[in-house]
Length: 139
Image 1 (cartoon, rainbow, N blue to C red):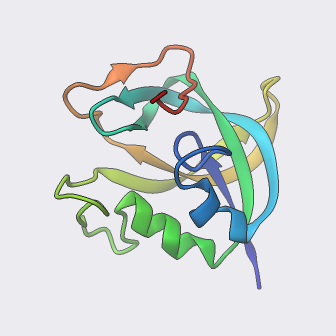
Image 2: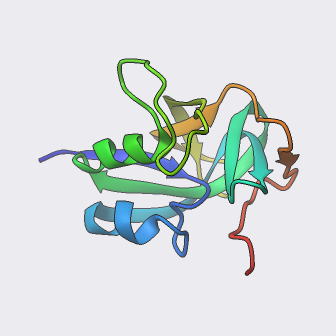
């Protein structure tokens, strides 16, 4: 069985809402990392969105058993054939795409490539996080 590398920056990070269910059973390795892009908080939805851009988005690169990809695609509302699907909990149509990107360590040295889920444009109400780091909302 093979492995995949995935960059995570939101609810899939350690301590995140979906980390235990969608990552832990498949997790082989975890490293702090960053990628080029812009990060937005989606306060009404409770999770972030990443877009392409010149900033840095901080998170983790996970090496996962390849069987994790189907669950991650489901969670992100992404289908490999390019069809949009409905979000897992409501009728908000996700605009996430899964693409390969270069991952860097926190000192800016390239670590290789990983899959990442990005949005083409953040939805209305999105708040830019210039530091590129999203944390779970405090309840």
